[in-house]
Image (tube, rainbow, N blue to C red; front, side, top):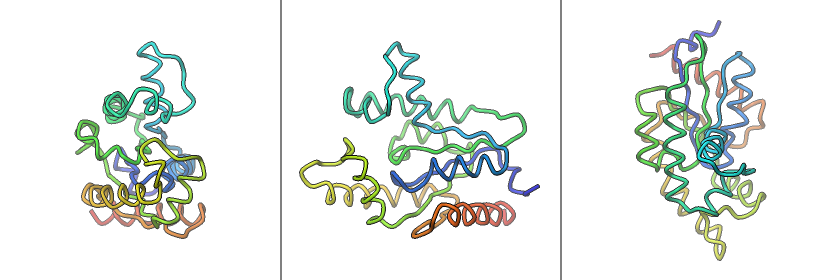
Length: 190
């Protein structure tokens, strides 16, 4: 078995649409690990709080604002940091802005390996707007707003990362192979 299995939790970080959920699910399936997506935990908490089900966390953010969303995000991070997966790794896909949320970040720090999935900003922007302008971007100038967000978030992502893995320009299979190899190299080198 791969030696890096000794590390209990992997937190996949990066900008929106860098591949955190896709690669996290594939990596987990490949090794028989538990996968959890922070967005799913946020939606579960939303329902536990007595609210009707929502199709995406975007709906919560749009309807109830950043403050309510960040509170749910911090609670979700706390749940993820407490997960135990019976002798196996937990791979968690965090939200694009999770590490900007000081309360959420505090719930996760020291509880796993942070892996920053690095992607080209132009590729990210195209993916982000393909699904409609998200509420954290200015609809009047989404490109400029995205680039401001990118420039603000990347230093935090890099500073928090135990490992930076470039997935720029890679198809899903190549990105997964690169991530897997980099994780093994990182953990074996510790």
